[in-house]
Image (tube, rainbow, N blue to C red):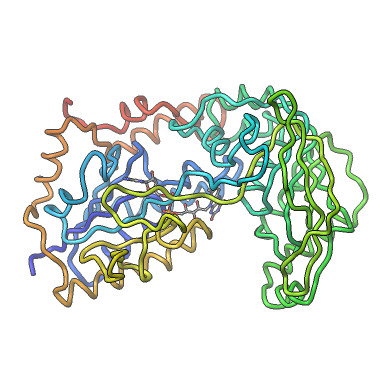
Amino acid sequence: MSRPMRVAVVGAGPAGIYASDLLIKSDTEVSVDLYERMPAPFGLIRYGVAPDHPRIKGIIKSLHNVLDKPELRLLGNIEIGKDITIDEMRDYYDAIIFSTGATADRHLAIPGSDLPEFYGAGQFVGFYDGNPDFSRDWDLSAENVAVIGVGNVALDIARILAKTADELKVTEIPDNVYDTLAQNRAKVVHMFGRRGPAQAKFTPKELKELDESPTIEVIVNPEDIDYDAASEELRRASKSQDLVCQTLESYAMREPKDAPHKLYIHFLESPVEVIGEEGHVTGIKTERMELTGDGNVRGTGEFTIWKAEAVYRAVGYRSDPITNVPFDDENAVIPNDGGHVLDPETAEPVPGLYATGWIKRGPIGLIGNTKSDAKETTDMLLADWSAGKLNEATKRDPEEVTEMLRSRGIAVTTWDGWYRLDAAERALGEAEGRERKKIVEWDEMVQHAGPEYEI
Ligand SMILES: Cc1cc2nc3c(=O)[nH]c(=O)nc-3n(C[C@H](O)[C@H](O)[C@H](O)COP(=O)(O)OP(=O)(O)OC[C@H]3O[C@@H](n4cnc5c(N)ncnc54)[C@H](O)[C@@H]3O)c2cc1C
């Protein structure tokens, strides 16, 4: 077998970076090209994690150690499947790992979901996290807002809507985001979950810190604190779920706090319709649910209309397909057996193609979960290489692929380039006494992180 093994990892989010790291650390001699569609790496750590979570954003620093390694080369500002086809990639690499994550919002088909103020959480996240693919403007004129969903993304949305712009100014948010948030008129935010507290998808820390903002009062109706036998079992089985329930109980029992923004977390209320008048959202209708003993719920036929001029759905993300790579449209993942990409017709592994991260198992789980996921995938790849199961690439010199990219006029961004972009963002932040201020424009990012050759 030709040494080193040449691997392309497609998507420089945490899953792709951890997979690259594991390959480099293995006993096999390997050289990895890490491709990224955006001009900057780090996926949803940069463009998903909320700006007021600096500790989580700080994971980027620990990932520097991986990207500093000479066996790993970052090739950014390249969309695989569009700028280079998968067939072409196969000439240059023995194996390709897809770690393309997810950025789109899942739909929620309820009446009224076509109204203009019915938003996907991901769209709002894209706005406030300065993702150049998303709107630079946001209508924050609603005083009453509803958020559908009781997971961490719903919490992020509700928290950002309920905080003041000045509380967020210390973070990395760009000027357009601060200026827009300063116009935010939201006073009341309602979150809705159709099941009970024991089925909420929050993590304890994120739920607890919600209350730390002096401008937010978190309110839970004591009648929503309900557990059936399956819920009790869930609490016993999971310390984390039990902590979530304890925190929700404490919110339900305590004295009112004098804070200007009210954030209600409702359980056992299933959103059934977005109410509109004259083409605009005016409310949300929910049906009261009851637990059925097994952790599921059934409708009681009792309905409530809540005032809301904007409704956000935080019901999950959805991955996009990559041209000429198998895709399971129903589950929005690449079909796989825990690592190998599977041919949907034969259910057999497609030689040399692998998947990891959210594109492999769907948009669930934290950054840390992508690590164990990457291990499963890279173990399969390394075993296949050792067993001689891969079709070897014909163009093995790493310079051949960069020459091809250059000949196509692609302004490839690099790891050295990331250091320049990073320094530029830090300098912008320092001038205002904060750690960093994000650069949003695609072209401006490429100017900093782009190639040192003429296009
Ligand atoms: C709003 C939100 C907030 C979150 N907050 C937290 C948090 O606080 N803590 C936590 O632990 N987890 C959090 N998560 C979860 C965490 O972000 C994910 O677990 C993790 O990012 C998934 O990693 P990934 O590498 O699979 O995907 P991603 O992070 O999505 O990375 C995929 C990368 O692939 C690139 N890509 C896509 N298509 C192509 C292509 N065709 N060619 C080249 N590149 C491509 C994308 O640009 C992206 O950079 C949050 C998620 C969301 C959505």
